[in-house]
Image (cartoon, rainbow, N blue to C red):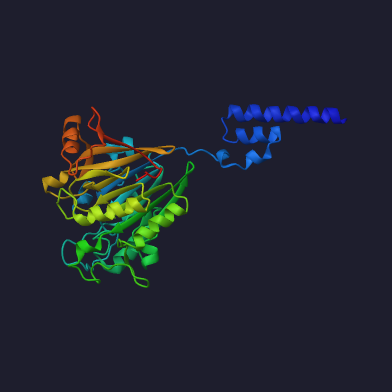
Amino acid sequence: MNNKNKIIIIILLVLLLGILLVALDSPYLNIAQNIASGDVEKVLEPTNKIEKGNLSITVTGDVMFGRNMPGVLSLDSSPYRHVSNVTSDTDILLVNTENPFTTSGDAVKPDVPLKASPEYIPLLNATSGMVISANANNHVFDYGVTGMRDSIKNLDSNGIAHIGAGENKAEATKPITIEKEGHKITIFNYMDSENFQEYSQEVMPIAGDNSPGYSAWDDTESVEQIKQAKANGSDIIIVYMHYGNEYSRSPNENQIKISHLAIDAGASAVVGAHTHVTQGIEVYNGKPIFYNLGNFMFDQSNTATHSAYFVDFDVHGENITANVYPVYISGYLPQFMDSVDGKSLLSSLNPNCDQMTITDDGIGKIDFSVKNETK
């Protein structure tokens, strides 16, 4: 074969490759074009990186499968069934698990100790995506270190990721980082230890350098962790906090301080749980803070605990829409509010978020960017 024919064949192969890449809408089309034109330097430019894609992250309030809950739980029916049109196809589902999964009978906490049978762990999974159990709360050690270890072992065996508690501070405070659709997502879980000073270290241990416990928020160390995640390339950082005064409808000063510190350090959003009732929403430096979602699956009889909301972060490239779904807890399980009740709940939140629009269907929407805001 002479050189002329070889050149013709090479040109035809490059053309065929280009046609194939166009047909597949490949992110590598520009790279192929640059190689074909001999402009190798452009291949190395950052503009040729794969673009950030779309994904969703759903965060719920308190989930508890103990006490009276087995009466409404079935391994054949998802407890998310009334809200499954949101939860079933989310990429990441983050829940605050308000009980250890253990069969231990040795309660350490003297008041309201909670636990759930490990057989119910599969019910945490409501999506084809990733499920994360947030364990930095005031119930994970109700049955002591043994109960916490049982819970982590049982979550692991069921393929449920977990954050917020562990054998030492490094393990307890370690976030989860997920890379998907060109995004690097990091999720932290902390509890405000100032809320529970009446409990001893034996009853509610803060993780130490060489001792098991929960992940306690620290104004210096936690802020540095968030900054480090940002420096390491995480473009979406969610801080899930267990804080606030139980049954209070508005955030306390410590909640506001912690949330603002987290946003200033680089968090994309702060989401809170613990109070069992809803608290309001604030947009601070362009990023949303959901001070308390309220319950999600719980057996409390107090009607004040039956109104709640959960959040679905709908990510499109570098833009995010936080969809706020009002729910009521009926038969211990969440169901969507109708448009009238949804509008009423969202309009009455404290603080009330001026940047949130409420649709005719009674759903809140907050648009923001993963990029840093200029102060």
